[in-house]
Length: 429
Image 1: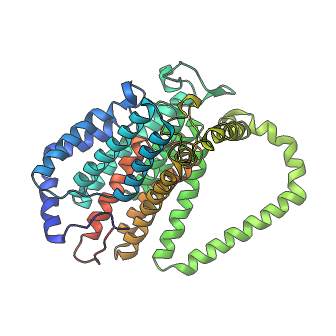
Image 2: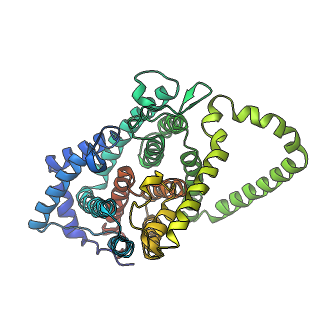
Image 3: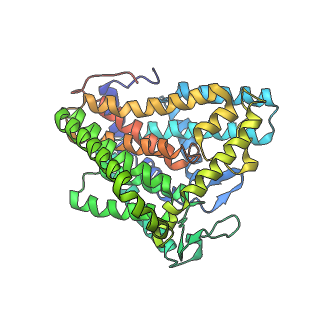
């Protein structure tokens, strides 16, 4: 899929030099990273504090257009499909102002995503690594805040809903919100931060310590989807890295071993362990920290299927889509893929799948062309972070999360930087 042509290495290097020396650009990126987690305090129309900096970014980006500096347009095809599908659904279903605001929001998010990607791409990879370190330092503080919220230390804003002041708790532990508007948004941010941490060239022991703490922060939010997606994406990252580094034998052997072990363990579970395990399982799940995650599985699945079933009856009457955010009265469908299909029709669902597919394939292609295995690991780590978001989207609507799009901007920017190096093959993405 053609999305934007890479800048020739010579002109790109000049852009990197000018971008790296632009103090205003550096400060703008740092401010965005610092304000990104502060979503609890919101403005009308679902605007966050970070949107102040993002609007400034758009203004700077428009000035960049007038100076004829390179502007990248990643994902322009799938985003265009999504917006077109949204407009068609609005017309077909006679949707109201809520849908109009949703389309404006989609266009706004893509606009600052384009400008942020172009700005980040003007920096050298070493500069991007410095930004990544800042991101991780802030994320570690967010993990500390969520842990404090879980055990009820500090201000009650760390675990109470900003909308109604409600508390989600079980067995004396709270589902922490941190500085976000809900636990799932905080968990998605920490999950993304976990993979950005993996991409930083800090000592392995330091990354291990920080990674464990970020994972503790995820646990404190009680988000089962974030836990599962983070673990799944982490092992997928390792497997893909081994394969791309030509260690196919190791990767294949490891996969076969894990699969065989899982089969044996499952057989033992069914035949011998399961009967006795079930007698104590309820006690374990309903006690202490497990109650924040495992203890909510049945209730969460039941409520989600009920929401989808309710929304289905409306969708079959409007097969082209009921209009963006038309199910706002239900709170959320808790599934981005279902929401895009029901609200924007088949064309909108195709647009989302193209967006996910294009973004997941990019780090694979970039890593395949790299001669430096450390750079391959970096770009694959960003891809694994997006994979975690794509998995979380099965149980939550994350497509408008600012942290997801900032991650994508970093992913595309570092990909442009690596692919523009003269020592590597050129590619159109």
